[in-house]
Image (cartoon, rainbow, N blue to C red; front, top):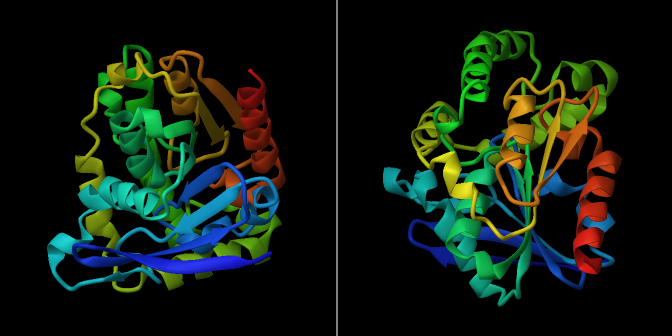
Length: 277
């Protein structure tokens, strides 16, 4: 299957992308531990029926980011995504967001709802502020975040990537190794602590902004996630009119990577339902 590669010039960055397949477009936005390679199990599955676009966010190799601190700001992510979609002249897209990719895709969807056919939010709430949830969900999720801060620190100390998870490291060591290698290659000069801080500061959008969404949305999470609260996806799905929620059992933060067949089938079924409805 032929893949086209290219770059989009934006202030401070040359955004790297790949295009594979043909059909209704799908754009995949990776998380903090990835780059365009993260979707190696999704592109072969969807490309026979869809134009699959993968890219590396600014600051992540092989995108080339300038040395100016401003060039690394995640506040540019949504405009980068818009520039990529414009550059490729894509019709209404399906956006597939994993974790950090939710910052790009949710904001793009809310700004340009007419240009988004479907939105997949995998283990992410994007720019939504969990403190704006209604109680008791708000209190439960804020407690979850506080309790899992030390869990992540412990996993890192033991050589386990929290976004991959302890089960992946134990049951699929080769896959866990690949996850960490993609993370290492993609990170380059990126200061992830600073980036996490900026992403957290961007979580200011009230959850109530989802109540009027017309875009079909699928929220998906793993029940053993230690990065994003597993219950968070179900809570958000209940806010968006007509949204669907899928839970992956015995799976961590990166369902798309750890249980690719389950992820692909869930996303594929959601798209098929939307196409026939």
